[in-house]
Length: 205
Image (tube, rainbow, N blue to C red; front, side, top):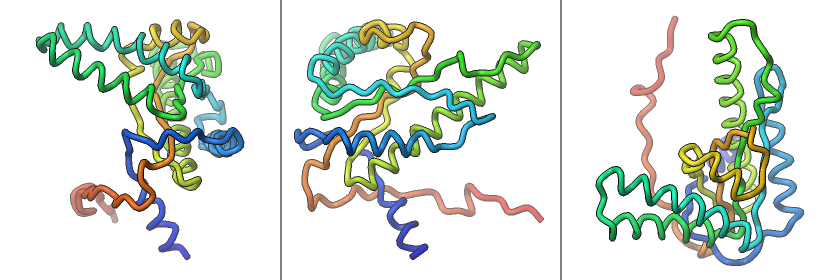
């Protein structure tokens, strides 16, 4: 039984394309409820989940972040054609997912500390807590037979994402999680290798 659970966890993969079938609301709620059981520093639970399922909300976010992404690519020296291609690919992924979850941190849940160093560490712990909730959400989605992918784009366009969706300006977007059913039921999993344990694990006596 233990090995079955480990094999299941290891079988999660990142999908960037999904079957267009909508995700039933009870399924989304179960996934989100499980995500809220992630551990958090001081049990502050600083995560917020903005769930997008309508074409309109996904398009607003995709267009707003896409414009910002396009400008960044041009500043990096990409050609107009290449910047447009990469921007359109990003927009299509967001708009094509049956559901998107903007994962945010609410700083109001972070303890106020007297010193700048301590305050920065508290914020850092809150970021870690939100990331744990996001990871738990991905595993919960996997348990429901959903495919998913983690996108870091909101880190680069946080205020723009919040404004596009009418969310509190004090929130701090951390990631965008795309969810949907796999495009093919019997599609083989991508072969994703991992570094051997002896390269990343150090047992100390």
